[in-house]
View 1: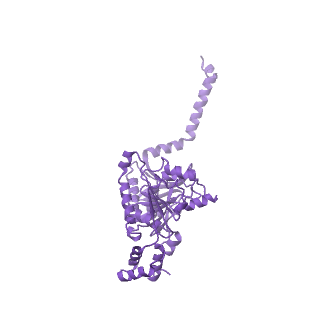
View 2: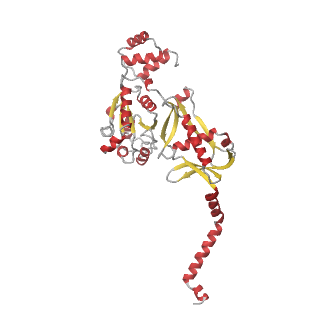
View 3: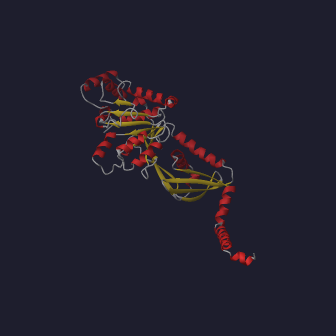
Length: 399
């Protein structure tokens, strides 16, 4: 067959067109292909994204502290609240503890010197099924040692800063599928929460037994989870107790409002599967969810069945410890607090004489004065918060 007849065949024309297209594509993308090859052989890079909350926050906060990484003219600011306990922003501000803003290189490409070498840093927002930030640090040279040293320094700086601190996480308000750190505060001693004799110590011992029993749960084929219901009038120390227990066990706290519009049937599964390691999950005022659900509140997007399915779901992390609090245990659906979901129910009531005495001694070590205070308050229905507020005024610590 001659060349002319071969070239005229449809098959040959298809092959020639495909070859021409491949050559044109290669020519058009040659710079990109060359750059990819250059990156592979002479450039090392390190990427961290916000889906890993610990590493990403460590890198962002380390960049804020590193003068060389602040020699740019475009910044991104992130805030971390610093309070002494789990409380509101208004209370933080009254206590003189405003949020701390961290400034780090903003979105885009930055070229700068780090430890005497030129590096480039790219920060970008990734939008897909979820929204997250990514920071990439790159340098010439195939050895990753300098980048590893940078990451390790960031981790060590955060560890040193948070040795005696408590992190509180909330659902990410932008997409609700993961957690973000909302505040950073000092750890609270268990002795600072004045409950009835032995209550706090019994809960601490129960938690310690739980964390030491993973193998036992596995041998019995039981999910390694634990649930507590703290109930009682307002001001009896329910939230303070969770904070103090987390502090004693060197854990953090994830706080979740079921009435939040961020929390849906779909997102609740993702949230429970993504609880940060070594954290207690706190759902406060769970009875409020029932009230707003029954009233068809416009903001409530979570169904009761969706919440129960998430609690029981296989995606819920092993080792999860759940605390639910309520002022009205009688309003809760029995299905929510049945065995297997709630293992321990603890009533935190109004103060007794021993609590009154111990609360007074926190402010004044005089035993006689403490006993007189107990006698003065005998027969009054008071919460620990009410007593503490009165004592703060008496000793000039509150207006």
